[in-house]
Structure formats: structure tokens, C-alpha cells
Image (cartoon, rainbow, N blue to C red):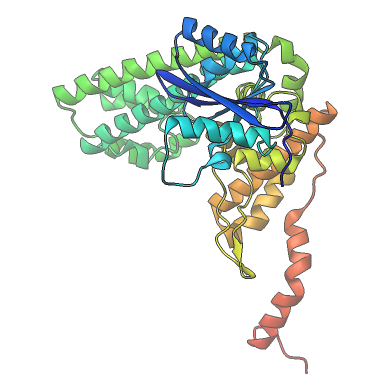
Length: 405
């Protein structure tokens, strides 16, 4: 028989407009008393709920982390100094069948009473508010990419295959050419915008730009250009606000920027997503699992099945992949690691592996409060040393090596 760990617990089933709460109270004779009550989600109702929990001397409150509706409930409980857990919905999934709000809240309370639940990571209040800023910034970046792609498609539909000639349509030369096209500048004037290595493609660009835009296409292109300019200025304002908010975490912010591929923005986003106290994760393995950056476990009857990564923090995963794509282009251990993996695993899996490695390093840097020092490990050489005997044996078997006289 499982013994109770907490004597007085409560489970909350949180919805948009309603919170159903059940308290489980262990009496002196060992019997259980329970009471269920329903509250609204407005401020006055949340305060009544907190008072109800205090009247029952509740030691622990548990709720699921589904959606975003738990956030205001959790903040109210924190301000009322009531110990609360937000738990992963996968860990509290009830047996399907007779499912109601009351039974869900009772189930949460029963699991909490027996100590079977582990709290999810909830960042401090200031970082929690900063998440609204960083995630809106990421949304704006996505909109900016979509608008640039749309602009490129309109040019393609008009026969101007600029994206097939220039490497980066968002580059300075390409942007000046596009502005000239929209403003109706002649081809000779557009060619004066060419800089650097793009000058070697002058004739190709001349043929590419020898097309006409219709008035409707010009109208749409002008609107997209104005929207791109607005998005760029909005992202810059978000960056300024984010950098100003990093003053309490200045040392950790600077430490993260010593990592290859990490700039000011990505370092700030990392701090907002995982905080600076690594003790709350316990180990590098746990933080990688929480972020969804490690292989999944799926084994049955001794057979290893799919190793797909689990679902995790999508925002952290996204920024880690961006950092990994930048890090593999630097002269660091990440470049060698990527080159050793990409041949047999492909680009996407290799990037996830690099992101996994970077997150483990971030955990160590923040835990030790030390800057990054690259060991310059040659992973390609390690891979060759490990596999060379097998390769040579195969080459000899199929007659690719010269035979001894």
C-alpha cells in the first residue's frame, strides 16, 4: 500500500472561464474527507479560491500545464503564498471513460497526495513576463521571412528570377535592386547597385532584370516593402527592450555570448527560456529531455524502435537549431562534429545533435558560471580513426586497393 506523502492537498482542473477544485484532507483517524467547489477565473473569483484553500490549510495545490489558462491561476497562488505545482499533462493522464471536471480535479489531488507528481519548470516571474516579449519577437521574425518569400514569389511570377541569381535576396545589393524595380528605375541604374562578388554575374543580372512589372504587381510590392520596413523597425524595438531587461543577468548573458554561434539576441532568449539557475533541472540529461533535444526511448522485447525526439519547449528548440546552424560554420568543435555526422545522418539530424551538445555545454557554463573554452576536438579525425580499419577491409575485399606483388 502506498503511503500518503502530503496530508492536505488540492487538485485544480483549469479551463478558460471555470476552475474546478477538489481538496483531499486526511483526518486523524486516517479517513479521507474531500470537498469540490467551482470558481470563475476573474480576479475576484481567484482570490475567493485562494481563501478557500487557506481555510482548509492546504499544503500543496496541483494543476495541469495545458494551454495558457493556468498562468493567471498560478500567479495568484504564488502571491497568496500557496505552494503550487504545474505538472505535465502526460504524467497525469487518467484512465479513459468516465471523465468529468470533478473527476479530473479529484485525480490530480489523489496523485499529489501520494507524491507521484513532479513539478514542471516555471521560470521566475520577471523571466515569465519576458517570454511574452521574446515569443512575440520570434513571431515577427516569422512574419518577416514570410513577407520576403512572398516578395520573391511575385518577382518570380513576373519573370524576374532574382532569387536564382543572388545568394541572399535580403542582402544589401539585392534590396537596392528590388527598390529600384519598384520605383521604376532603368536597368543600367539597377546594375550600379551591384557590389562585391555579385559583379561577376553582371550579364546574368542584366538578362534577369529585363522584364516589366504590371501596375498591380508594383502596388503589391510597395505594400510588402512597407510592411518589411515596419517589421524590421518593430523587431529592433523588441531587441532594445530585451537588451535593457538583461541587466540583472549581465554576467550570464556575457558568458553565453562566448559560445560559437550565440549572439546578443540568442543569448538573451536562452536566459529567458531556461533561466540562470541550473539546479532546478538537476542534470544536463534532464534539461535536454525537457527541451526535446535528445533521442527518444522506444524499446520493446529487446527491439529498439523509433528514436524520434520527444515534444519539448519548441521556442528553445528553435533557437538551439539556429545557434547550431551558425556554430557549424565557425572554427570550433561543432564544425568537426557536424562534418562527422552529416555524411551518415543527414543535415537535420546532425543539427539536432549539435543543438543537443550546445545545450549540454550551456548547462555546464551556467552551472559553473564560467565562459566557454573550445577544446578544438577534431571529430572528423576521431571518426576516421574509428572506421578506417573497416573501410580498408571493404576496399581490399572489392579490389580497390593495389595487390601486393
